[in-house]
Image (cartoon, rainbow, N blue to C red; front, side):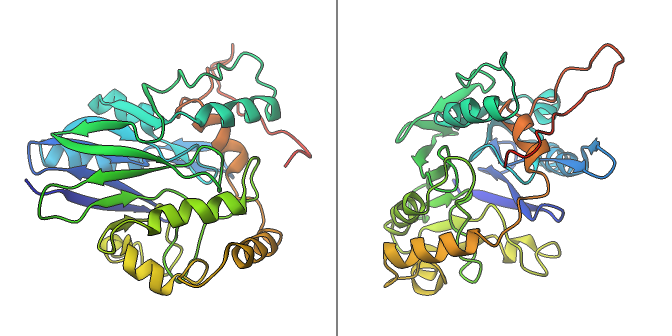
Length: 294
């Protein structure tokens, strides 16, 4: 039994999505599926999601899980569309409820359930799901947001473990995720990242984003680094960088960053597990844009 990881890349949001499986005809999981959204026209499309679906169908895979690291601010989740086509259950860390409560207030959504019930499965630290006998363990890694979860895949004997790190670590020359969203904390992120970097040196860390040139042409060449590589070379958290140094750097850098282009459309959809708002009486769906809040 050998794990197979196939990356896909959305150029608009620089998001890496993955299909994790155990070979043709086997169970699989999809990590971080993207629903395409054109903010200028307010149009959604499913081109990126259909690439994932086509891969699953071509290899006769059985979709068991759609795994989300957190409620992203830079893209909308395609989980509902993929479920309609392939089935599977949505999984997210249980601290999504904290983000739901925060953003229900920001968007003034008094009727929004904030118990995580929009998702099929909520997991806390150390809790697990299985994929064909392979354990996938939740690691609560707050900092970027209070709810970030990395997904530690315990590989079969003879293979290195792997982790889908979400918005914690980027490539060594990209550093780390920002921490200035509501509930974010640079200090927490430092400790979360060092939990990841305490794993064995050969552990494979799969990125959620990569902003380098060339990723779209060959996602497999840009999607992963080992723990050893990150400890040696990551410009923000390599060995020898203290928490104080990191917090000072991260805070100063975050103060220079614009909000992500899609944060206001994306978060209100993603806290609903990717479900778009219901159509109004005229048959049109509407997103809410709060003013002067973020």
